Image (cartoon, rainbow, N blue to C red; front, top):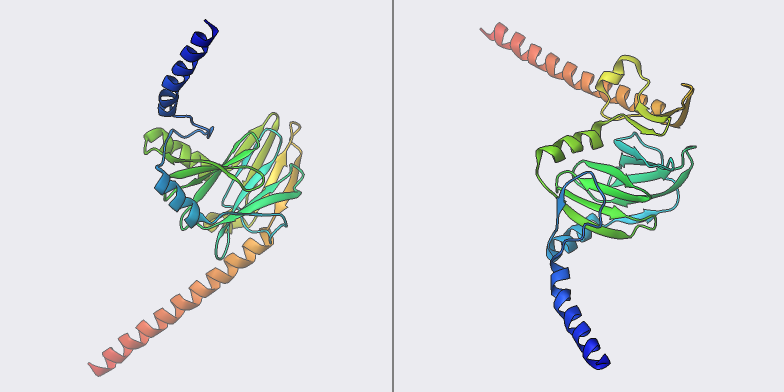
Length: 238
């Protein structure tokens, strides 16, 4: 009888294995609704992204996106010259680790406890990373109204709350705030309203914007002068 029971159990397990393979296990805990990527698409995307871990803090850059987990870890998405960067900081603003990767479009960051999800907007792909830079899972983000709304919050929200603590991203450049493409400060506000700046590249952002505006002004001025001269020349010829 014991042999029969063992044989029946083995047959049941062999029968269940194919059924279990049909069940989609969503390892990524995210606010998006997602679906599976086929193996070829997964491998191609991972190869193209070329993600790597960084252990030393790179030069601080303006903030494109951010998120904060329950332990106060802050993920800051930055735009590098050749690649994109995500830096992880403690609640006191100390650098812990980060990632670099290739991406031709916008991206957003989303904490799942201590696992970080990175959403690639142009590709509609989301992947989860551990603190060692290992890719734990990768999924396709579905094209839905709810996902579009969640994307806006992920990319453009300027505050995150953890308990009674609020984390804010902002600029401090006066009227130039209206033209800034990114943010320069992270401010932590506690339950009493006291504020503490833990990340600050405001001077760099201000300098960059002034230089950009001067260059634009010079080009516009040159164009106006050239057009005016051509107009005067034609007027004299007539």
